[in-house]
Image 1 (cartoon, one colour):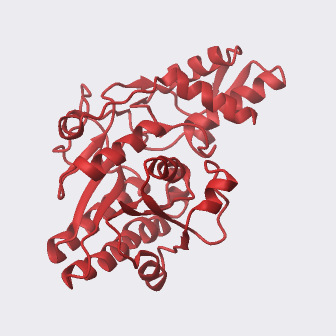
Image 2 (image 1 turned 60 degrees about the vertical axis):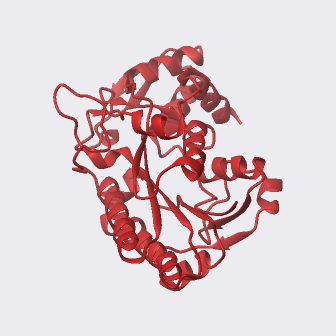
Length: 318
């Protein structure tokens, strides 16, 4: 299959490219000019891949990047950091929502002209659902969306943009709402690798306390490689026009993640709340119901949380 992966230089993008290439697909990746090199792909893997630049704020750049005879486009490029989105909400909307609108429009125009018929797999987020009801239950795809952050709101905007183009042009679109995932190569701007880095530092300097934000939220914790397997399954067995949660259905409190990291590092720590690390409006419970995805594709997560955390600690040591 000829596949374009936007954001192939990013965290999930790198793992996806590696998996697609291993399966024999013809993969082209996009990267943002001036951005850091992939923390996932080796130099040899990067050199073997055809690359195109992509700036989602620029319509000409988007049109040039997506021009080609693709059978599928996996759209991962985004402003993915919730912290960055809170500091620049307008920028998050410009990249995530408007950028997706530009990309979908460029693909949809070719579909409408009967020049191509690519599938657009849009990577969204479980955060679009917002706060859970009380008592909390896993979110289903039919639940209303009520995002509580600039990042989540801009990703819901991306979904709406792609769906509108699909209705107007016939572009085939699948939306994948991935719940929190981590693994080797994830930037320390994100919660779990940041916690792993603080615990490793504490052990190195023989400190027994680390600063943290709010550790009470419960999260559906996945390994990035399981999420990548879900993307692959949706490319071949997902239904156009549908939305799928990528989730385990099980929640773990961030406090438990800290405890497990401490045990795995052989350095249990005391946590001290730092208001500067806390997020206003943090979701109390973010867990997804994976039944629809499992029924459609047979997908289920395989990598245990302990393996993900162990490999994160090892990656921090490199």
